[in-house]
Amino acid sequence: MSTINGLPAHPLLVHFVVVLTPATAVLAVVCAIWPAARRRFVWLLLPTALVVLVLTPLTVRAGRSLAEKFGNSEVLRTHMNLGETMIWFSIALAVAAASVTAIHVAEHRSKALKPAVVWSIAALTIAVGVAVCVQTYRIGDSGSRAVWGGTAMALELPASPARS
Image 1: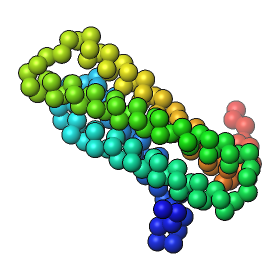
Image 2: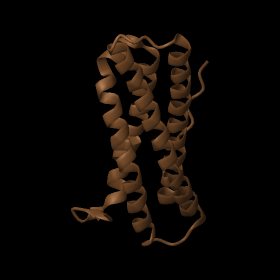
Image 3: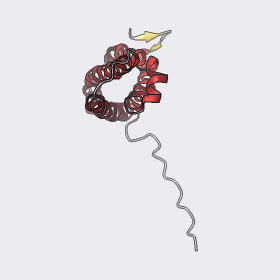
Image 4: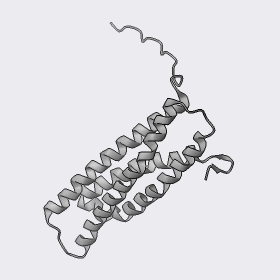
């Protein structure tokens, strides 16, 4: 899929990934550490993580297709290399979401898990959530540099008047 309705698919898909991935990571962390949130929102967690998992390779493939239309610059290669890693972060996010969901299922069946297990999953979910958000930022930043270079917002702001 290289185009959607005649437009390059990559920039369109990227917007879904850039919003949904960190939102899912935050939801996973909240559900992992807050039982009341887990009871209320866990039904949303695994499906959104799976959507991220599906959208990630589609976005990468669409990016490869779009990159073929441009030169082979260093910043574009950097963005593509970082983008290729996102599937691993998406897999980790889906595993974390499944683990948090498993906690909920166990609690719902009145099979209390040991607190050490719950907190270990929470700690891993926090680590995955932070890593996913950082990697999403890094990929997005490299992509914007590949598109806009050093020229975006390059206007100098006027100096503010001195306050006495």
